[in-house]
Length: 252
Ligand SMILES: CC(=O)[C@@H](O)[C@H](O)COP(=O)(O)O
Ligand SMILES: NCC(=O)COP(=O)(O)O
Image (tube, rainbow, N blue to C red; front, top):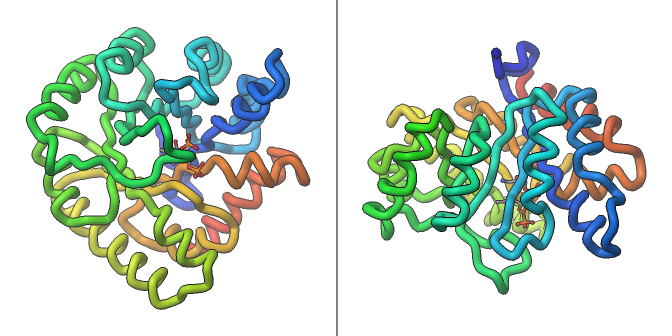
């Protein structure tokens, strides 16, 4: 299966975690992440991203299985580098596994993985996932030392954490968001020189996506929280199509 959107060559992975957040707020089954995944597929998403957190605060094990059954899109499973998560990934065999840092007390994924400080353990963690056929990605901050370490430990992909750029952008701190954007551009080029595929995500919305989508080395953006929130007002189909339009504009 070709994963490339011929229009843009920039894939859109739709993260449906926060459909589960809403469901879990009341218990029961609504809103259903499986329905969101099917809708995302119909709206032209190139993949579905799910973050199975250790505390199961949004996506749960049963959601992963049900979503994988319901859609034909590639699944990108985000997880912490723990034995439990490795077992789950090996049992379900998603298309891609993105290793992310996780702290129970955090509200969201606050930073990137410290690959440079944990090389032997990550190398060992990644090998069986790759042997099982997964494309292994590391969620890292735009830091050259981390990009180089990602290449050394055997990841095929990095996902650059764009959260700091998005925060500065939202605060109207143009100097800081520009500096962060320069780091993202530099690290994207370095990663591709090292043979890594480059993705980006975290905190993207209509306002901040343009400069990120324009980085030529990027082949995939993973976007969730904004899409699900905006879908409350205009529907998931409309919000995915509009995000795709904005990404296309940035590539013209
Ligand atoms: C790693 C990452 O950026 C995504 O998983 C996204 O932030 C949704 O998960 P959380 O909101 O739980 O961090
Ligand atoms: N890896 C980033 C992701 O999946 C979506 O992040 P967000 O848009 O929910 O912040």
